[in-house]
Image 1 (cartoon, rainbow, N blue to C red):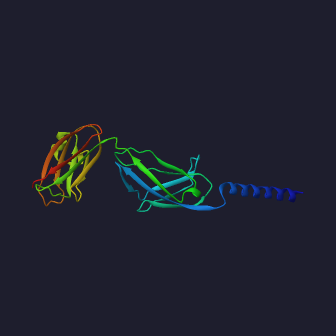
Image 2 (image 1 turned 180 degrees about the vertical axis):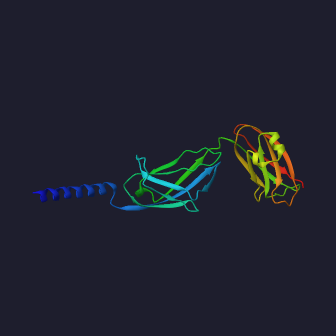
Image 3 (image 1 turned 135 degrees about the vertical axis):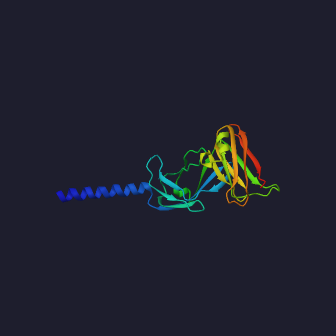
Length: 216
């Protein structure tokens, strides 16, 4: 009699397990995901970023994959008839962003684009370091201050931010509050013996693009 009861319980458990697998979808598939970000209308791939997947309506994630250099990753073993949700979040200084998510059924989507959109709710400034002929000067050290006294010291270690001009001579500062700032500029390599200080003001959510003419 005990054997009959044990066998009956085992058989019922197997039936429940089979029914559960049937509900989940007996066939598993894989889904490709491309993760991109959108900042000021410009879109680019997001590399080395975790993308999480979980069943819709559940808080805990099942697993995650990391995007490659092209922003792509692949999820395998998903049940085709189950609704899942993808989530990704990456913070960028000076930009506001809420977690990006998208729901999907694997049977309806073999490739998904997940876009992370950022809002520029801040002020930003861009400066191009150029010579008297307008040619860009790279490797120029630009330090940003909000105090004329600190700026006059020429000490970048007490600056708000600092940056080095790229091959186009560009230095960008983002996430600034409205106000008046000072810049100090010096050559970081030493080929051009330059140093000068400049001042500018910017409004809330304002954008300033200007050239810094550097004369050795």
